[in-house]
View 1 (cartoon, rainbow, N blue to C red):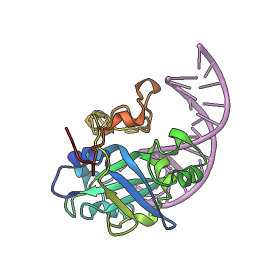
View 2: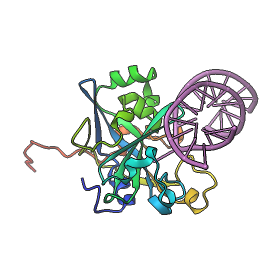
View 3: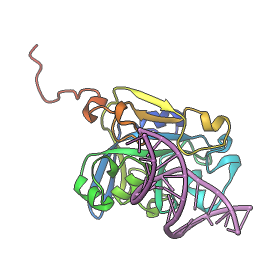
Length: 211
DNA sequence: ACGTAGATCGCCT
DNA sequence: GGCGATCTACGTA
């Protein structure tokens, strides 16, 4: 996947359905990405690099696309993937996943089960065991991987969560999610569908087609 | 289903 | 000293 030669908005949408895997104590814990947000760098009032702000905490945002930016707020870690070329501080926040491998480990890490395991940005990092140790590393070369997964049947956009009083940046539709997937944060029960129905049907592989 | 409060910490100012 | 790109528990319908 190309994290450099595309707009951050495109990457945020392309990440939906990709499989996110983290090596936690020797086990590849994983899930399909179902919700993301784009943060558009120096012009974006909601972005940590707004107006070129550069402090030790946000340093990773200035790395090349494919770098990992993890920061902490309250007691949670939030996971971002840096986009664009080095020096252009844009990123995509991973907000929710649908668990795939080692669900039992995620349940144990969260001390919760069901949708509460990973339907929020702080929840999914806790479930997978992601900490600040990942900050500044590169996707694909260390303990974090992003690989092919499923194809969303439909993608929805909305304003980003938790960005009050930032004018046009509060309203900008920079949050993207797999329509109807129950693991999307703050999804009304009424709008949920069975998880499998939010994805395109899997192609049947390794099977001859006799029609 | 929704709103509100409280937690309790690293990182800036 | 103040403030979050959040989460949880606990009110109330």
